[in-house]
Amino acid sequence: MQILQIISSARGAESYSTQLSQGIIDKLLAAHPGSSVVVRNLAKNPFPHLEEAHLQAYFTPVEARSAEQQAVRHSDEAIAEVLAADVLVIGVPFYNFSIASSLKSWLDHLTRAGITFRYTPTGPEGLITDKRVYLAVASGGIYSEGPMQPYDFATPYLRWMLGFLGMTDITVARAEGVKLPEFQAQALQKGLDSVAV
Image 1 (tube, rainbow, N blue to C red):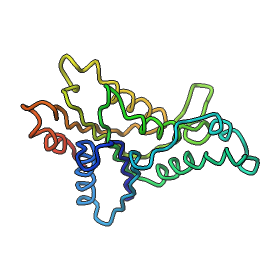
Image 2: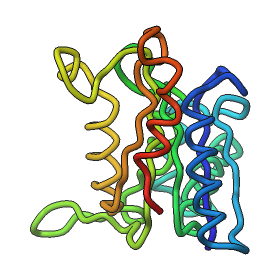
Image 3: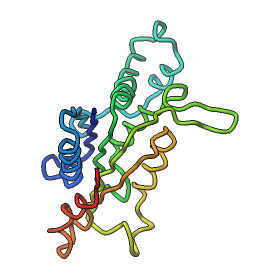
Image 4: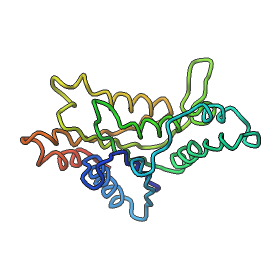
C-alpha cells in the first residue's frame, strides 16, 4: 500500500494536524506492514498559486508549451502523487475557519478538467477513484459540534472538493480544542482514538 501524506501546517513539529496525521500513518503502517509513505510538505515546498500561464498550459499541447507554461509541472506532480497513492492522509490546520492557502493551492493544481474530473451530459464526474482519505483536522476551538459548528468552513469544503474529484471514502479525525485548557491535554489522543484503519 502506498500512503501519501500532505502536510499543510506552517508550525513544523509543533503542529497538531501534522502530529495527528503522523499518528494515523503509524496506525496504517502497523496494520499494513511493508507499506510506503510519500510526504508532500506544502509548508516547506508550496505550490505556486495559479496564474494565467498555468491555466493556459492546461489547454496547450505539451510540445507547444512556452517556457513560462512549463510551470504546469506542479500540477502534473500533484496529480501523479495522488494517482499513485492508495491512501491519502491530509493534515488540515484550521486557519481563520478554513484551510491553509498552501492546501488550497495544492487542490487547485490537482483539479484538471479531462484528467482528474470530466464533464458529462449529467454533470461533472470525478476521475480519482478507489482512494481512502483521512483528514487530520486540528483546531484551537471546538467545531465538530456546538455553537461554533457553522463556522467550520474547512471540513465541508474538503469533503465536497475531494468528492468532486472522485474521492468519497473520507474519514475525519479531529484534534480540537487545542487552545482550550480543558481540552488541550486530551485533544490529540482523542482524535487518534477516533480512527479505525
